[in-house]
Image (cartoon, rainbow, N blue to C red; front, side, top):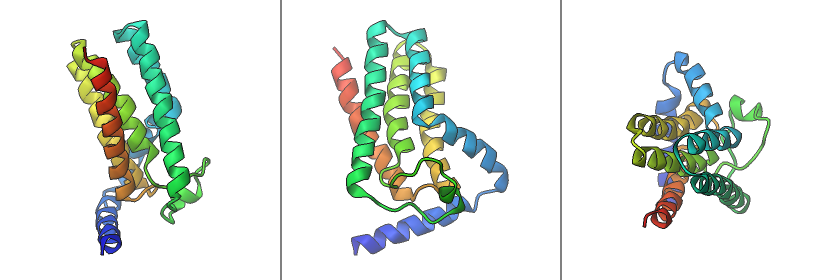
Length: 171
């Protein structure tokens, strides 16, 4: 029952998103690139250096690395096969599908950076970071790298971790 509901949800949403116009492919590829772990770590360093203290930089980088470790461990144990798509067949780095690392890492890293920039008066940057979280996750479905439930699980798990991190940051 639950498995068939998940398959139905994934199938319907994948069909809807992959049916979007072809001109979105380039923006989706760019967004996916920006959601890669290396880019997230570089983004973390830039934003934290520009808008925070050195301690915030250390915390943000530790959170980014921790999120990557947690996600990699979850993928190893869950080991869900990725969709059978051309995009996946050309991926350089092969890993399991569940949960989406872009969604998980984006929720933690971009979410933390959005929190840090919002508390420092840079609401416009916070909005861009939140948009990156959303679009990066959707791009993974659009490109065929993940099922929607992979992305939703990444967002949820990343959101929980982000909530715990922000709880530690607040006085």
